[in-house]
Length: 359
Image (cartoon, rainbow, N blue to C red; front, side, top):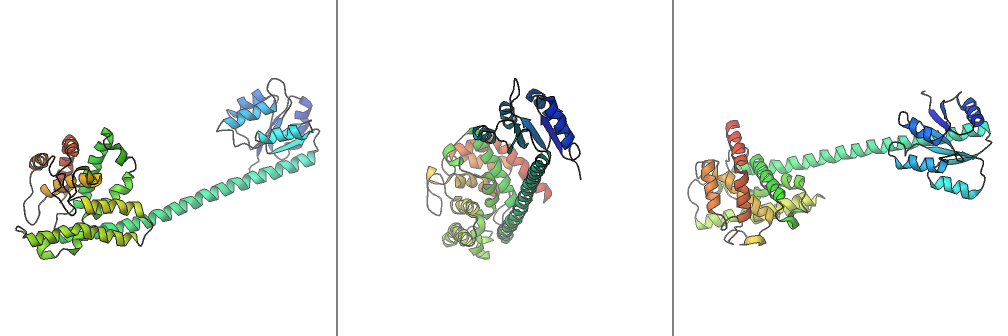
């Protein structure tokens, strides 16, 4: 077993000699004649325990331990005071400053050894407990991550099933997440809508985006995949996917403790087809009554729909899609978000082109 290291600090040479003789059979002992020398020594070596005399010239033991406890690298070192003082007030002061014990001089060698042994054992057990708790925390975090990964995989699979039914070219989910991340990052960088964005958890928020169209599971294939123009009745059926998506997410919420993730998903599902001028659905909200996340998703979702092939149309070019979105500024889309979109639209273009090359 590796020998423990003890620093013995005392201005009395006799005490240092006796202490060294008593301790060196069991420990690596370094003798130091002042608090200043101790602090200098600690810059190079950290001991397992310090035996510190109280009454020393220039810097006494109380001042020395204060300095030890103020420094992160030395604050954890156990300190035992050695002193000729026997009054309870001095002992209380030493313990209050962070000492773990208070031994009076002249000390009994067997008693000194036994008390050092006990304190080193306590420190060892304390460290083992810290390590155990750290490992336990890592295990809990790993298990939690596994559960969350499984949950997210299930939810993503649900979203991908909708994507497959709609016969959309693969990658819609990944693209909308990427586009939204770019747009919201620009929003945060410009400091817009600070009151709303201050409470966002961007990680959870972006993870929830795949569920924005989950309500489309209710739409019949002959409507969802219709290549021509929808009738008024068919369009009413399509509009139902927003509120049904909210209902699906509410059902999921009732069976899980993870609420924030699903709260974001519900906002996306229920508001990404609202329009700035109030002509959208399902509730006809207008302006800032539409949740900010819904207004952002509206731009992202429309852009991806425009630059992608769909059963009812061929893909537009990036420039055509940008023009359509700009022309809808203040009618379909939040004007400030459109301005942000223009700033980052080249990043959207790169993602769209990369997705096409992979497909």
